[in-house]
Image (cartoon, one colour):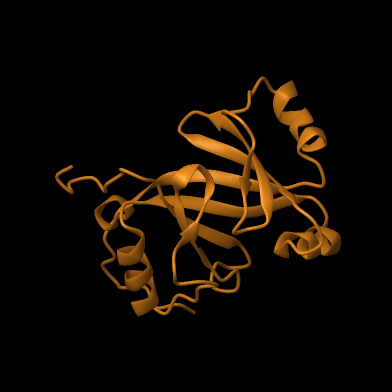
Length: 156
């Protein structure tokens, strides 16, 4: 069980800003979009290839949160094997953070396990790091830092 301090500060104090997106794995962006279009959601801009992850992404806006559809690009994509094994559905939850390196350091000190501690490029110019799903209670968790964003109270 991960160590959690008895008097843990609230998320905003630590720089965790809000749920950034929910990522859904799909065989096809067009087929995967059908339920979200039927619900009245519209894509947020153009689809984007995230080469570092080997996926094409389509994002839908819902309030302050996105729903991202992830379509693996070829057999070499790490998500192709996941999709083949588990089928389409929830892939990860992503939380927006103010300072990615600081959050990686803080969580590592608490015993968090990461898939990568070196930030990687994400969608829309963001930088991301993923926590191991075993540490996240079976859920893959992504930390996202968007360009030109700062944590509340950071003076920017």
